[in-house]
Length: 526
Image 1 (cartoon, helix red, strand yellow):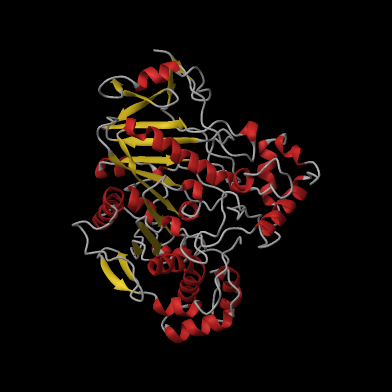
Image 2 (spheres, one colour):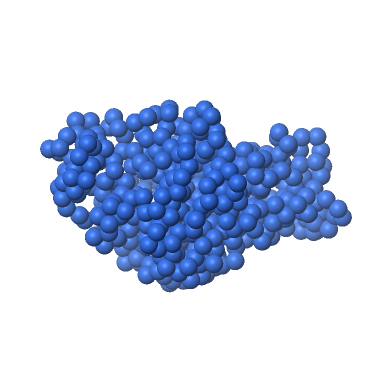
């Protein structure tokens, strides 16, 4: 059989159409390879430990020739396209990923079997890294354990990031009407590809769940308010990832101007952006943000074309209130961001905590007053404990409170969790941001996991995996392995506490919620 390079995926559609009309099973497994037809052509993956795995499967064309524009579906190809190795990650400032390219619109699939009659639930993961970095080539995000345990189809995908995905140009140049939300449109194109093709991989296009951690959850919250995403997914879960408001067009334009100045590109000739090397655009991400300071921020924009209102302001978007949703956070979110041995914590005491903590709260609130309130409420806390508790409650948790409460007001089916499980590998990190990724994927032994692989971690991971699978399968995360998980209502604010012992608590951080609720919530980047 002819095999073509995944980069091209070109050719005529006749062979693809013939493949889709084959009677019986829609695939052929040959040795340790697996061939499946798609709407563009046939693809070859691998059979690994009983799962059919497809890596680097193209869902969109190379974005380099059409920078800052909406993505396009792949052209049909002849022969069999190879999907046995991860494709490059999308360009970013981080050097964590060895291979990056603007040709990065690829996804990966783990399935128990590609029989279209199976109609398994589909779980689509959107990676974190804010909107600026990250990739699903990270072993923490591999879908083999989840697909095998849950008898589900797991899909992970990459999409354009930072300036490539969210540089807002349309107010400056009408040639780029989609620029501020191109990264979101990539994800939507992937979901459209999944709707059209996932049945041939054993999935049910009518039971698609999106889930994501950190920035991945924020991207999902944003998609829940984008009309073009309507009907593409049927349940959702966000893990420490909220997006209450999007960037306003004026602030987004100010950021674009700062980026252009750093690049040396005149505002009067934005066509220069189309010929600048990829590496130069990445280096321009060091431009100073005129709104927030620090490196320039790029994220979804209230452009009044693709995003016509804020995702969760002034309420939960009615478009998605019928979608069952899990919202989760961790007990010690900021212990992941702020190094216990770094300059913020080293030498921390009551004389300097307010000054050090103020910028980490990300809100305009009196830091000495906050410290005093926490010391009065928790007199046994050390300065380090106050620092992490306050920054978690004020910075990394409030968005979830707003989203959960707004959905409760609307009567939307919502279940809230908090991970309290403390890392046995790095105890000073506690239960930090990202600890729920390996718990939900079952990748406890992957590089970067701090869950450990002991019996408590394994038992908790199985229960969390089963809850996410239950939401994908039935629209409800309850299953026989956990106490009854009640939906989030007001004023009870029922919350599942995931720890070595699992329990339900009502409004478990009421005091912190009420304390920071005195200050208006303005999401960074707005």
